[in-house]
Length: 133
Image 1 (cartoon, one colour):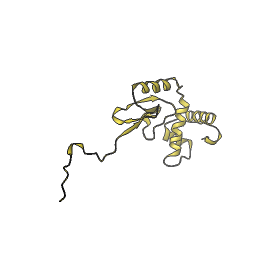
Image 2 (cartoon, helix red, strand yellow):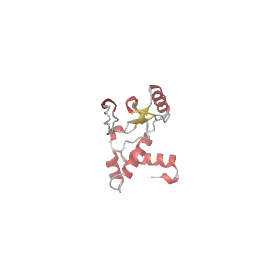
Image 3 (cartoon, helix red, strand yellow):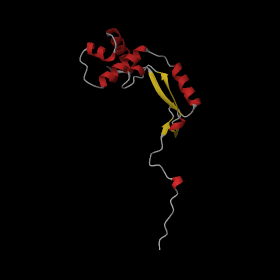
Image 4 (cartoon, one colour):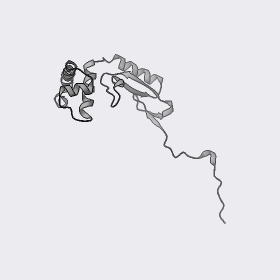
């Protein structure tokens, strides 16, 4: 005769995957509830969908010490307005309907002609011939 095993209801495994995060500084994985998150100023960061977050890079750290190191690193990096404008232009050119005119590009980026021209010049000067706008 078979004996029935008693279920231990207090120690069930969750069917949900364990939420892990990755530290942007040391690449350690750790539980998501221990993550230290924030934004640092970065002129190369254009948010894919929210213009209000342009110029801010989200960072995740495994602790306050690593977050402080990343914050200081980005604080020391120059914030170049033309780099941010170039990131906005790149976002528009790689998503959605094609842009055919400077006017359309200005409407979709919120930039004026002089800003667009400065951004393109900055981009071309800093990224080499294969990445030119």
